[in-house]
Length: 187
Image (cartoon, rainbow, N blue to C red; front, side):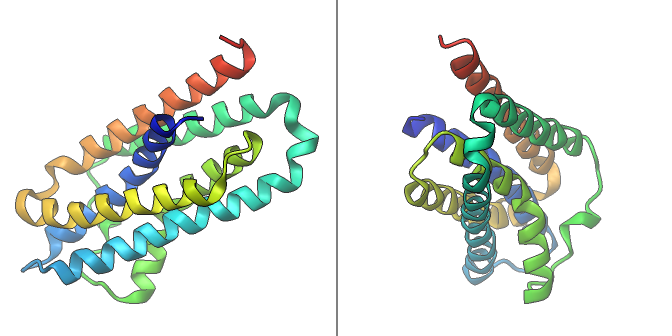
């Protein structure tokens, strides 16, 4: 997997966090860069941690499922992508969690938005991805998108939330199809 593909995956899994960060920005009466930093650190940190945990989990089963790992990656990435696209059509702003930046709420939101990154980490173990640079890129990308999302939400409101989730879902589906085509049919 090259850098561009890895960046596209990082951007794709960051879109849930970006969408929730937009909601956080929307709900803040006055935005400060401290708010953006806090949201970015929570989401970026968990977006780094979860693929690492997924990688460790996937490494335990890699030898058993190496013959069909590309199908697992395809199914996981496409499932996550389709779910993100489905959520993009929902107008439920309650999932944003209001304006609280309380640690308990932020951890719950960070875990919820990084479950897809856990699944991506499992797929990384199948393809012998160097995990430390991968999680650094995912975490950094998620941090930047999340911090920016707070600002975007505070400036423009909720109109970008659904578009971010939709395009993030499309990216993950594209990557899943690409992995399947490359591995199953060896282009």
